[in-house]
Length: 172
Image 1: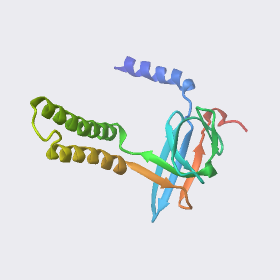
Image 2: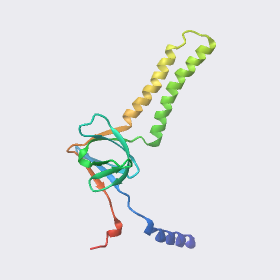
Image 3: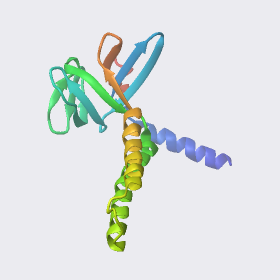
Image 4: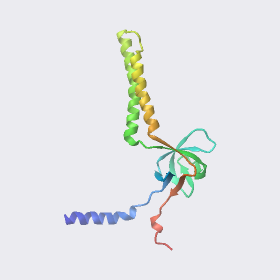
């Protein structure tokens, strides 16, 4: 037991020099005494709306600097140009169920219509199948709306780039 402990201790000591801090974009939202903090890291997808623009843009973050975000397509935006940010909070399970309900809704109406065409039953498109399919697609859309946070940048929201460099910690 002691040898395993010593082995892992030495392994972690040896690997500590390869550990680097990751830069992140912190979104701090404070309202009515509640503080919410969201972090978006390098290589994450950022959905943002710029001031004066109507639609959201989506790009993958390549680098974060003082007050600048650099994307993989070599476009650069400053933090003060951002009007709103969209964050998906559902995680993998929420996104999976959202896609599953959408595919089930489209597939159900297609399967029912194909079955009615093969069996020569009328009407070709059944009302009940349309209601069920609409309910499944509506559930998918509702999940997308509920699992997405729209954060407007105003006086209660702070954006900052958190770039910790531990290698220069002891320098004077």
